[in-house]
Amino acid sequence: MSQQIILCMAPNGAYKNKTDHPFLPITDDEIIKECITVQNIGVNMMHLHIRDNRQQHSINSYHYQQLIKNIQAKLNKPMVLQVTSESAGIFKAPEQIKMIQDLKPEFVSIAWREICPIETQKLSQFFKWLRDNNINPQIILYDIDDVRLFLSTLRIGDLFFKDLPVLLVAGKRDLDFKMTEFKKMIKKCQQNNLKSIMLCGFKEYETKITQIALQQNLHLRVGFENNLYLKNGKLAQNNMELIKETINTFENHKIADYETTKKLLTPEMINYE
Image (cartoon, rainbow, N blue to C red; front, side, top):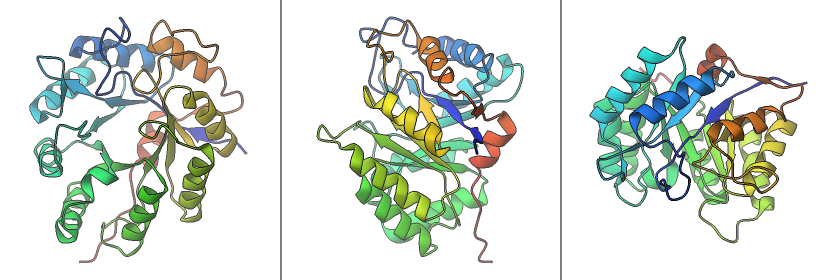
């Protein structure tokens, strides 16, 4: 049976620029326009990256705060706006944590391998803080080792959540990435009864990942952060062309509405007090 599937748009990312694609949205105004346009075709989640004055990756909390405020002012209805704490080789875990604590975003993505090297006690304290401040993290996992370490830490209760949404990534960093390993990542998360499993694939993996997500009723992240090309190999005109091509493959599936998206990305907490 099909169910509502979250379709998240990732319009830019940390690395690409206008030389990669002239219509890559980088400025705040461009990002706001993307949010409005994509919401009009039913997408209810946006994964947000910001840039500094040199168009370099940034996690500046004030900039994020202003962008979110301006997006919300322009939209006709609510949208899940997820900020990223991604390091992009620039920021260390303490800086990433500080951004989240300063901003207090409703939704944030956190790469497990970037945050887990901090001391176990500090990691636990950080996730307790997330819980206490009603911040909804989505954990990014790049390989099977990430999955195993994250799940073992989650299951012993150190993260103060019974369950956490995850994003499984195919083909971003490993040139020898194998789909067989990616399928093991999915299976491991399913065996541990994770409520919200989202997939994304970089470059040519995006089409394969879309097929898997629809076959298994998993959630999906698509956009120029991941991939610039349509299934036929042609450069997409813009994010919208890529998103529309994805929507056309949904058939009997339905894009999750705002309330469903929000619910699926809100993890169940553990209260030890």
